[in-house]
Figure 1 (cartoon, rainbow, N blue to C red):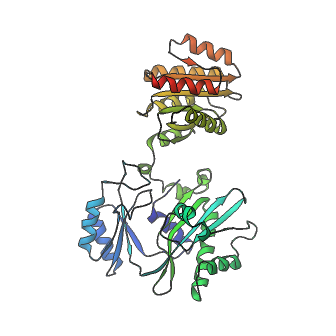
Figure 2 (spheres, rainbow, N blue to C red; figure 1 turned 30 degrees about the vertical axis):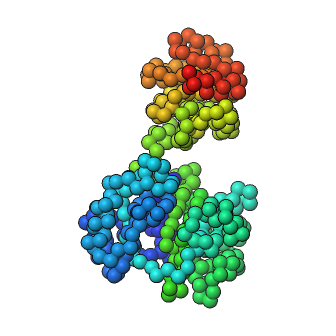
Figure 3 (cartoon, rainbow, N blue to C red; figure 1 turned 90 degrees about the vertical axis):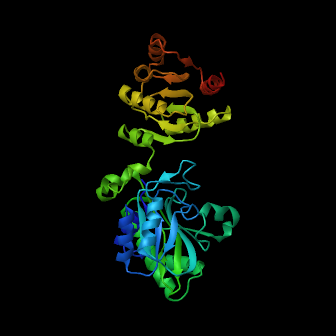
Length: 387
């Protein structure tokens, strides 16, 4: 689960992480009032969407009056902001965030992520703040510091100081950074985060080390422990199909292709997407219905697939182990009749009750293209689009 910048700064502030004073606004008048409440001659107003690149897209501005705040908010609110992460359709701006302006002397990058290889939280830092970390990694990988945190020790002061020195921080800045990184690590662990990204982390002209931006992603599996964080979810920033899939405990991710894929098991789903691409097409989604899906869940998954207007054909690839093939077939038949299936449907299934499942599909009256194996299924579904 992702949250907005202003929410991330509120969460981090509770752990003692230094962030600029700020206030969100949902209307132009609220933006003007927020500027006056800050009591500073200058402020920064930022569009609040779940995407990076807002500054380059015109979603961030330095302002010097309440009138400027009102005018800029009126220009942004209710309208889509297009960045390199939103796609051409953009994201509708429903809030802006005003915070006190900072005199920036240096920009750094700081992030905490789960390092699967190290089986620990890792600190990623760089002197190249303000840039996309992927761009830094591609151009100047030597400027990226990666330092896993021993889970038994936590963020030890010596480790924080070592990273501070590597970033070129000096004197009091080293102590400030160590305290900041320790607070970030506590926030990461205690909120079940999967990512905390501070880009940029800045050193001000006065020598303070503060978080000028903040992004947090949380592990959905840990949200039951954090009802306060769960309430920060903004459905407007999420794909409607992904939100609907979550109601049925389906693992669904919207992609850019036109082949709808329904599979049981994450590994098989990844392999299915790979083989669709191998035969020259692009998957429209990742959809794992899980091992123990019933007919109702299968039907819901099928409806979600077909709600995407870009889907020109559907590939169902199932190995019946815990989930039986006849249960899959009933769910598919029910959903296909409900939505009046109008695109080619290719089914490859093997495993428990596969004979019964194929009989159900054959007797349904629905036009189904059956496949013998994964390669045959991928080839047939791509051919069906060509026709």
